[in-house]
Length: 225
Image (cartoon, rainbow, N blue to C red; front, top):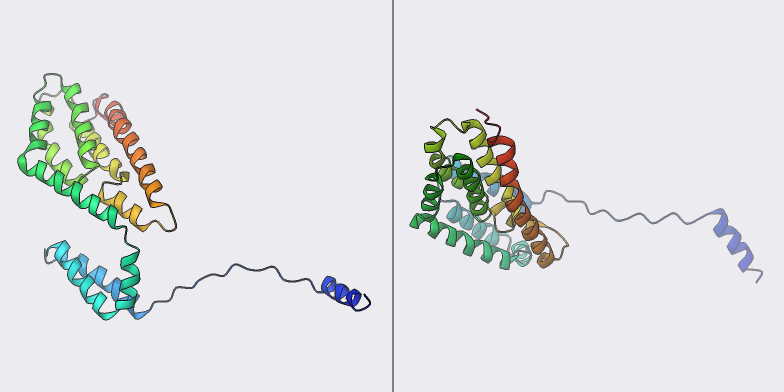
């Protein structure tokens, strides 16, 4: 008892310092330097030399995996393979539809409607729906020429129509089936990927249902341009 009292007094006079959370410092290791260099090389190879993006990326990945097998093994285990395979399947399906002319056929059918405002909102919905599963830029390039016939009638402003199509086609990139949404899903750390996938899918569905009509009301109906 006598020894415990001085010890207690000593603890009170010298309180224990609060524990500080450990912070992990990331250093620029040779493997990380090589990965960043490979990303820059991929961009240059695709944009400057017009090489195939997929084949170039796989080639660089094989080189990195051969040089640093242990790091590559850990990175491969963190890839959301079900999401990758899902996106590949969806993109293949949309690519087949595009090659068969289905998207062009649907756009031409909408463009032939005699009511320009109705045709405009339907084109916005087609752009949003297809862009949720494919490239937004590609869909815009396919749909904007289809809007030219009823734009020439002068009842709809060209600037407002193009802006509405652009907004409808790009804002749906939050969909987990699109490239950007899939990248967000695959790179999200420490989350339940199945739950996060469902959340992105519900949010993307709401955006597809609401945004085209809102863009049509704000940009097309007033007659901008």
